Length: 75
Image (cartoon, rainbow, N blue to C red):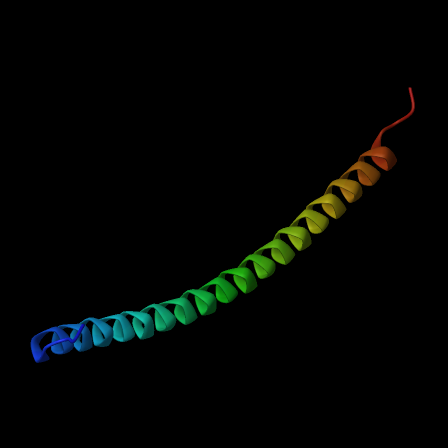
């Protein structure tokens, strides 16, 4: 079974298209990996900020409770 020139050209075009799509998908995958890493870093930063804010608020609450304990007059 022998392929004629038209079939060979068609096959070459399909292979070229597949190679181009493969390269495009590779580049998109790399971009998505980069974006995922950036989102993870941002998430970690936000979690740390959230934790710091929680600790500061808890500290303020503790100080207010301590102040309240010391300002209450005994009955």
